[in-house]
Image 1 (cartoon, helix red, strand yellow):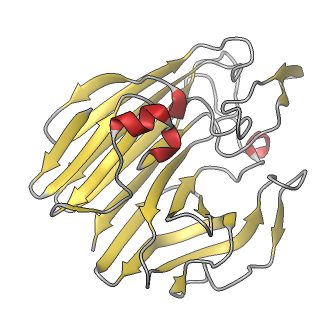
Image 2 (cartoon, rainbow, N blue to C red):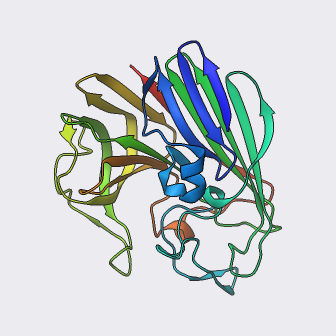
Length: 274
């Protein structure tokens, strides 16, 4: 475990999965806290993990450059989901009191994502804020599909409202064969403060603009990102919810712009106490 500090702000990071374990401001957890032991047992217990070279579920058989590749499940209980970064051991590249950079190199084996890439993740603390940057560089000799997402977990608190603005609502291909755009089921994502959904929510909000505001009785947390979309995962029977910046919609990876050989794609997320 690596500990970062900046005045009254603390973060703990594990090289397993490049996962965030804890982010505290003034000794109070901003995100759902966990331990390294829990994450090594089940990465879904992380406070945040990186998704690369794709986000969400993809089909177990894909065609790239006219070649079909059969993919094995990244998690047997879920399927082919979230890529390889969240399950890999990352390497410490640089470290200081308030910043950490990790690296991960993907060399394909049978059943893995078939194309080589490098990933970099940077954690940087400032008083009251944590910035996480996730980048992927294409190491194939041809243009390649490339997707990125960050998957932060927040604890449910009674009286929470969430405010953000997005252009559309996307149902991903989980229980349906293909994703689709549909009408919103409520006011979440319309620019107005909205409560967490009472039902299960596992949907994407298309073309996010501006910041995401999380208001609880104890204060405000702000999520700022350059990612194009925001995925909301809020199981009704769990004590957490996730607000996940992503470069592509789940199920749409193969329709996003390809990444040129040697080129890098990057997303950044800052979570701060307002």
